[in-house]
Length: 365
Image (cartoon, rainbow, N blue to C red):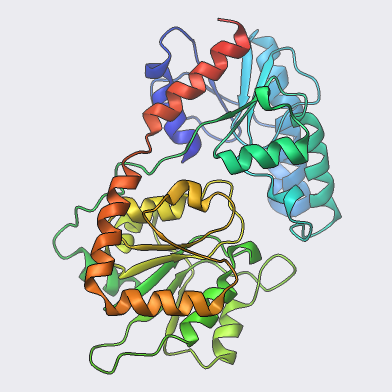
C-alpha cells in the first residue's frame, strides 16, 4: 500500500523530478515508467526460504544498484528496510520499523538475524532515512545510530476506499461469504507474537455475554502458521480457554472486503505491543469503527484521543473496556465520530509531497 500510493502520487507531487519504478517480478500499470529486473536466482526462489532470501538479496544489493548505475539515476529510494552495499546514486531508505533489532526473539533462525544485521549496516550509510512515526524515528536513531537530521517522518494514511459509506446489504453479503456472526468484535492484522493476541483472547474470556441480546463473538482475521518462536498458538489457546463458540478465526479476507468488515464490526481491537505506525486502527477509524488500541509504541501517536488506549498486557483493563463499550451505544458513537475526524487528518498526498521534499534536500535542489 505504501509503495502503491507513492507511485500514484509522486509524479503529481513533484513535476520537477523524473521518476522510474524498478520492479522485481512484474511491470506496473500507470504513468510512471517502469522496468522489471529479474535476478539469476529468480527461477529457484520458489524452492525454499533460503533460495527466496538469496533472490531478494541479489535484487537489493546487485540488480537494482546496477540498473540505477546504467541509467545514471541520481537517487534511488528503497521503499523498505534494505540498501545496497555500493551505490553510484544517492540513497534514500524508508524504514517502517526496526522490529528485527528492537525485539530480540523476532528471528526464526540465524539467516534472518544475519540479514537484519547486514541491512542495518547498509541502511546506516543512506543519505536519508524516511520513517513513519516519531516513535519509529526515535528507534531508528537509537538502534541504527543514525543522526536525527538524516531521519524524516512521513506519516501513512488510509486509502479513500476506507470510509463510513456502507453499500446496501454489504454486511449480509460479508457474513455469508466468511461465515461471520451478526454481532462481532474484530481484530484484523498480523499473527506474530508482537501483535499480543493472547491478551485479547484472555480478555474476551472475561467479557460476560449479555443475556438480553444476541451475544457478540470475537472475530480474528489472521493467518496462523504452525506455532514457533515468532507465532503463537492462538487457535490452541482459544480451545484451552473453552472459547470455541465465542471466538472465530478467519485466516484471510479479500482486500476489497476489508472496508465492509471494519464497517460491520461493533468494535475494532488492536492490542499490538510494537508497531512502526499501525495502519489497521487508522483504517478502522476511517470506516467508522470504534477503536480500542494498546498504548504502546506508535499507536497513541496515530490514534490520538480518538481511540480507547489501554496497556498492552493488561488483560483486566481490556476486558473492562470491551464490556463497557459493548454495553454503551453512546460511547461507541462518540468513538466513531472522533475516529472519523482523526483519520481525515492523514493524507497520502501529503506523504508524497513530504517524500519529494526529502528527495530535493538530498539532491541539493
